[in-house]
Image 1 (cartoon, one colour):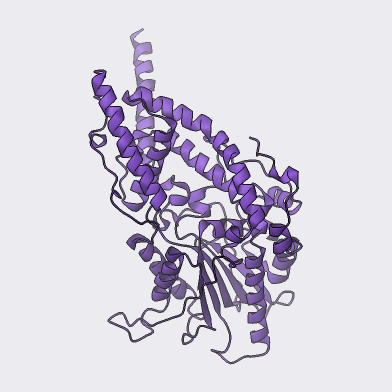
Image 2 (cartoon, rainbow, N blue to C red):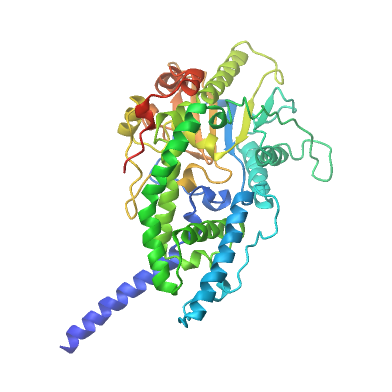
Length: 472
């Protein structure tokens, strides 16, 4: 009997230690979906994928970059939401005290809590950490491709483009300062001036196509209530758990705001022991999944218009490659042709562009989107999924398409390599390789999208079936 009891106690102790170890290993900053800091998550990549070895004699001749802006402050609307949360927390605490409820499990920071952004009249700007992310990315990009960035600066050689939203253009400036550091004569860092070009918000179909596409805006508006409905069970379950745990009468809106606060504290302020600590690791994983699900349905593979409206950007990328090949074949003098086209925009740009390339899919899923068939939603935890917001489009997230010239290759002279967040990534359309013959890239990945004209796709009214709510 004693031996049996001892065995049971040993099993329980083992389970407890294992559970504690799992919780200690859980880093909430790796579960913030698209609110993740680039420096925290850029090292996360598919460890099972073996990148291609670039053949001898192949050299990069052009680089396309599509990047999201760096870490930003909360927008004015979300700052107001946090102020409302503070007000409601005061009401909940007062009600609990009036009812003589035990609040011994309640964290001390909640009593009298005020938003770190209280009193801030504007928001959404690039913060210092965001500047660092893009500045460092610029330095690493030049170090990785020294032959591409050895020419003197000229805006026709290194074209830098950004949307008219200040955090995007500020990100372009930070990147450029890193990219060209030491190559000018301004200040101790020997910086140099450079141009950042922006299109009008009303007509920027390459970087803000989501703003210009009326059919997409109608689709998104029609689907948002259905997406909220999909998320409700998770929020209701966690709201009930928070009520039981802390004896406060939390609402679903409180849970929504606490999750937003957790993401802002962990990402922007590196605080993980306040709002985030109210939630268990499994609850954080579920909330992260709801964010990933929303991005999938409204910005990603959930509907073909989400990414097909990005065709003007894809065409611009391919055109820049063809111009680079023409310059090489015609032996243009160095400094007389473009070597990099560098773009800075938003999650609403990077996510659709990644989908156009077929990233984060397996072969059968890629074939489905080529046939415009719906993909299943990202599976709910604890099931694994490829579609993770912190990888697809964190702050500063990016895709680089590097064009290589391989003159010694008898069958294909030019190849495209795709780097996502600076890591080689497989392209299902190119048989799962990251180094794809340009002709194959154009035929299998680009061409199927080009049959869709942006104006007819965005300006003509969608059929009624396109407006049906999503189903789980």
